[in-house]
Image 1 (cartoon, rainbow, N blue to C red):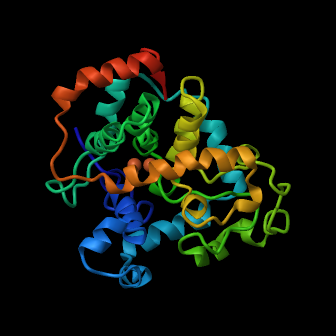
Image 2 (cartoon, rainbow, N blue to C red; image 1 turned 60 degrees about the vertical axis):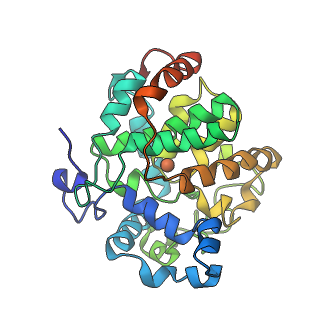
Length: 297
Ligand SMILES: [Fe+2]
Ligand SMILES: [Fe+2]
């Protein structure tokens, strides 16, 4: 069975046709420098972002920005970090995740497994460590949240700190005006509840697939992998440097990995899908090296 959120829930709750629509929008915002050169354009010509954003994507960001409050994040963490939804092998989880398809465009869109494999294979081709290949293969597994009935805006989207002022560098920052924390003096100053350069491990991030999967993988993967998982959608920092004031030295070192990872996530899309049957034995060994036989989601 395959279904999208629009068939499960109301379109008002989940404006995107599929979760990929958010990723396509990120790609539109941060185009591949190589494809700009190939198209003979300048970066400025590519930056017609706000006028070209689809209404469904705008509505998605509006819902995200209005609803991601400090209290909401704590509530979702309390709920999902118990990992009592279901227990699955990695392979069952991949199959489960693949139920997320885009029924507006079933032919052209590659499934979730293809995105994961293209990311991990591009990392492998460049000779990076095997844990980074595994991180590429696993990085979006947290999107199963959507299949547990969570709204799109609490599964994907750029992430950012809550509990302090929202940066105007966050995409569609104007929508934060309707977020209850925006007018709360506890949370609406530059530092809010945090100390200068307190380190991101002390900062609550908006809730979604990144934070969820980070907690799930914490016991198994090395620190750079965990940074990649946790902050790969934190575009306001890894692309815009908007939260330098909350970062400590460790974060700065580890963000080199987050930045290294990002182009593999964004620019590895390839119309020729990797051959899963051929690749499977390699990934089976890799998964067995780092992860237990089953994972609790
Ligand atoms: Fe992701
Ligand atoms: Fe991704």
